[in-house]
Length: 383
Image (cartoon, rainbow, N blue to C red; front, side, top):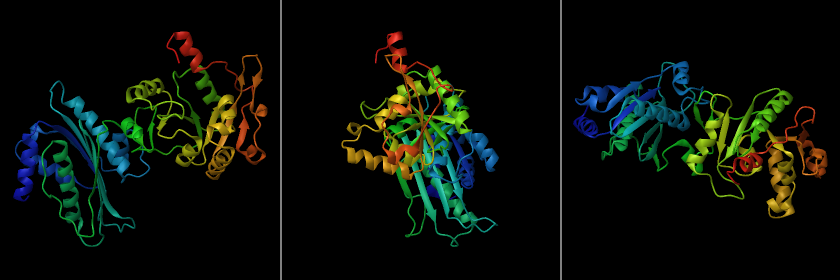
């Protein structure tokens, strides 16, 4: 270890920040560097190397689509910080989580890029570091040295320690660094820095997680029996699971606050998957979740074909055509109106061009005359 790096790590240990560090695919050298420098017990609460795919999945609580990605590094840093908050106990020390995932030289030839993704999560926000390495110019040890130094740089930033240039890379290589003042993943969605956030029934948070099959959209204020029964009926028709979707943005209302989003998410705990998105319109959601089937009620289906929600009739048609190219469809549930009539898809004037995009849920399979607004009025919580 060179003197500059040793002094940098010493400064980290002299800061008040405590951290959990999790690395996979590379960067384990950073753990050695931190531990061999006196004072490590003041900084390192825990260091983990979930190297196999199964170990990484167990740590995250889900199987990532890509083990080596910025999103996976974010999830690792999030879980690491949650560990740090628990392990620091009652101390007032700032807590940080560092997540690192990398693909480097190995004894098996790799067709993909050699790259690293590191995320640092602390009380001031999230910083990500992304670097693509030029292949065939370094051996494994040299590549891992770079990854390890980026991990140290990430921990330096999370600890509030000024760092000079710590990573020697080629002029053709760029260490891309991005910082957000966001303090949790929902905050990132609100800022549209993440397109979506999937919460699994087990409580795992998956940034930009893959969503397919049935998607039941709503505000879920509150989640009620009608939503659950609708999801169950749709699941039987579609022959697969249904994911609930909640957008933090609404065409007619201001964005939801982080606390409100978490309050609504907690309704799904231990029961259903729910995805939080930053998309307020169906054609935006469709680009995010291509080939899915949106499960909607009669009133929402009616609004799909009302030009005033798009601006003009031509804009409406353009939006629906864009949606059609994604392969998405709609499954429409009926609803009883104030006159006691049960309105279904058949009562909606759907343009012939789009009739093939929509199917109706038979009344015999779903009829629940209950709405979130009715429940809010009954409970006295207002609109």
